[in-house]
Image 1: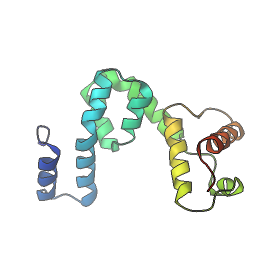
Image 2 (image 1 turned 120 degrees about the vertical axis):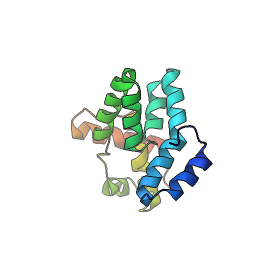
Image 3 (image 1 turned 90 degrees about the vertical axis):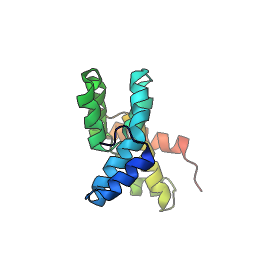
Image 4 (image 1 turned 180 degrees about the vertical axis):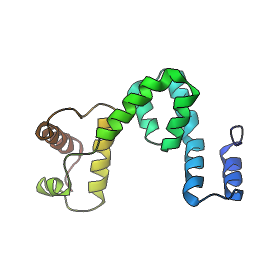
Length: 146
């Protein structure tokens, strides 16, 4: 229904439909980010670039990609495997021990670890102790203490 509409027109249609706020958000987020993802997939951009765009899409947007082109099935399946294992092993207590003051920086650090795991820059298939060591090393290298 909104495939050929621009974002503003899609937003207007979604507002007039009887949808929950969450349903409207899913439609509009998909509409907003799907063109970038499709371009990245069609032009064979590097996987880390594609995966970063996947994280912007709601699950329904990824499902749409999967059914629209079977060639992308492996890329999407790998993304799902990584996504399911990408949760940071370190936590706020570890960050506190490293000298970070509690606050929004914790969320920023943990989100960055999640992103780096999805794109393959941090491990997901090692023993937890090794993963924790790598995450701590990553944090000390990429985030300065205030």
